[in-house]
Length: 114
Length: 110
Image 1 (cartoon, rainbow over the protein chains, first blue to last red):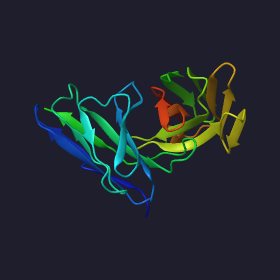
Image 2: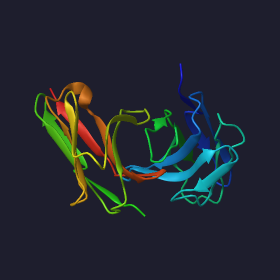
Image 3: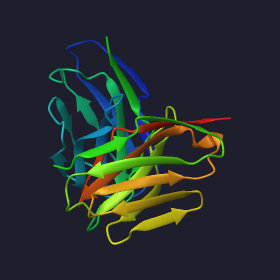
Image 4: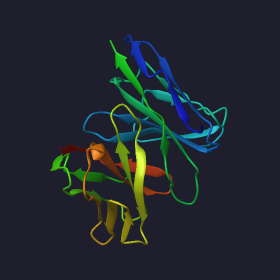
């Protein structure tokens, strides 16, 4: 079955700790994305990557970091610099082209800072 | 950047009635307008999309209309069923970035 796998599904963190959320896809998509979802605010883009070894900041990149060493993987690190990290995080992938196509989302990771 | 506004934020309809969700966007260069459905605890899934060279698109009980002059687009769901209960997001994009609306929680009453 092709798809996107995010782990862990639930994560608890103490203030001051960095955490890394995993995102793996077997759809052979070049492009991958991280979104943050907060109640009443829709989905906001954190980082995106169009190709291996390249990524760009989205609208709310402060306090986050990513890497794209493999086509299949796009991990997100939530650093201690992120002021309000409690949220639902969604990873997505797509086939990049001249214009945006369908995004395929994972089932999300819910991060709670204690 | 692109700003997408979505209304209403919540919508309750009787089973069998129609539901309409409206979105406006700010960047006239946007040329792709998808709609996503998110069920509880899941990631969003694309249900229908429309590109700027098309005014209307239908897929069974759902349809989307686009007015580029007014910069607004709408989702129409006819003959609503309980499984239509979910959060719906509109989005607008130019090239690689999708900007999402805040979402509409649709509840279909039996």
